[in-house]
Length: 409
Image (cartoon, rainbow, N blue to C red; front, side, top):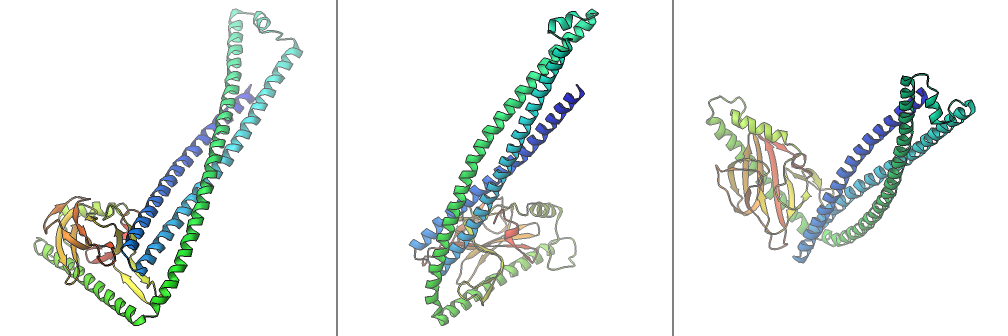
């Protein structure tokens, strides 16, 4: 009887562990599926914007950058789908093993029960349940024997039913998981096919870029012009931040030991801490779009030997889009670049977010805004149809990488 109790205990432990593993794998599967859908949505957005720019005769360099982004996102999608397929394989293999273990356990229980019946028959002690009860020496002994027979019979029946039900559930689950794995494999094949198509498109773009390289003088002039304009914008943004720090510190009752940092009031310190706590979780500064240029040093699209530096990120969006605040804060500056477009700066404690390339501004200096508040219209270039927002982040005067702060940027 003790051996049978051990079997029961082991069985219950196996059920419990299997349940926890399946629950964890299900959560991981749901997370991966959510990420896969997000990446698919991002690819759809890139496709839409690339098509819109193509209709507006956007320049070939920007088209190439867009395809680069599309390939990168597609590769992430393939990686996520690979993880899903691997996870499903693990779950299927685990369930197959569980089914085999349950069948073994069921066979052991049947064998044990049969052995008990044979031993009872051979010993002639329990020729029938009735005789077993009538052979009791006292009423109490008969009652205990009756309880034993009832409990033991129920125990055996429930064990068998539970194992059979669990086996059926796992078998059905395996069928479902096999179908899902086939579906994921189909998605993987589709992703690889599309990626190969994009690689072919990139090759065609490279051939067209060869024609651009023949006119190096004109392109070099464009590079110098863009670098000069970017430098002027960065300098004005940093100048406005220094001026905002100086103005805020002048109004403070404390004396500043570092002119490059804000003296924070208790309220501003709370806001700064809240902003910092949301690192990696801030909303996008546009409702829809994709990152077309990241933060930091990058190689020129046509001449890889030429390096550019971006102190912010560029987000390509659709015509008519609005810039929106990534967090609650105060408007500390409205910037207008001579020969360029406008920008809005928001202060979040000692963090500064800057939204550049706006055609119309909806806010004024001193306004307090909440997250998602619309700040202005993003400018659409009438020559190439591009609608792009340049977004910067600073902590005091220190440059921050927005990709580390904005959710999945």
